[in-house]
Image (cartoon, rainbow, N blue to C red):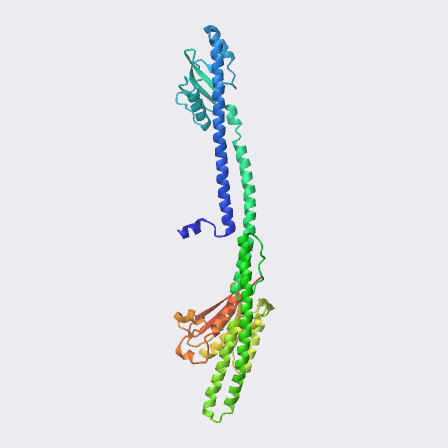
Length: 441
């Protein structure tokens, strides 16, 4: 049932309000036209029946006591085509017996004639263009035809005018309803954009607290949530700064003590333990801060890649670089993106094998950064788990001094840029980690 409802009605508030308003207006127009038509038909039927009754009464008064020879000439003088009149029973223009009233108006007149006039037995209708009703009546004991002309009621039908006026009113009401739906939908659209930015780790501007009471209350709640998040973020930054400051001092003393140890057999292991603690501490802080306060600036992706490779070259790590001939300048957060690529290269060095390559290219998907190696890769069933925070893939990796945050940090930075991170095993062995970032115009 829910799937049927979603396929039947539009999914946005604006189009739902517009479509429902359109349906309501069309039903209202149909109801108004139908009600007007029924009232007009009943009014015309009653009016024609009253006229026919007056004609029969006046004719009976005139013919009563008149010689038969004069009656025929008098009836002929009263036969005006636009007024009800009587004709002889043997008139050649009498409609066929099967020409019964067909239209709504003629059926209503026939019903009124039978109900309000005595002696009406047979009623027939002449086809267009001469719209007439022929009703058989008794006049002074003789059968006669009462002819009722209807042409002016068919040619002067104002139903289409009423329908046009109702349709114009419906269009005007629909325009007003569409404007109202747009004004309601606009703050909701702003809320959707702000929520999406907040989900990517950005800090959107507070929403204007205007509009209907419900929308205004929703904007106030969202702004209050933004303020609370900003307060929590400041407190978290203060806490992280305190932890970093408080831990680095004893770590420095610990490193100094290790260097001064006389037992050379323990120095190497303890030195590695101190390095692991510092690296884990740095990953915790990097994962918590995300993009931090860095703003997006117009950057050259090729220059970012060259700068990263220069840093690794200083420590004797050779990385192959592949760049497209023409890479566009795009809005990026260079520090965060460099941190992401550094994590990917470090993972390739730690868990993969040479050669390690870094490629930057531009295609229909956007801007693509790819780090690839020729190591054992990751089992396909564990690729999704590799991007989860604090998730270690195997027992060997749990003892390497990592925290399980390297790939999670990369995935978070890619998501905060509006992109995605893809992990895939390579043919011939190895793993490729690809960051795909959409290019904003």
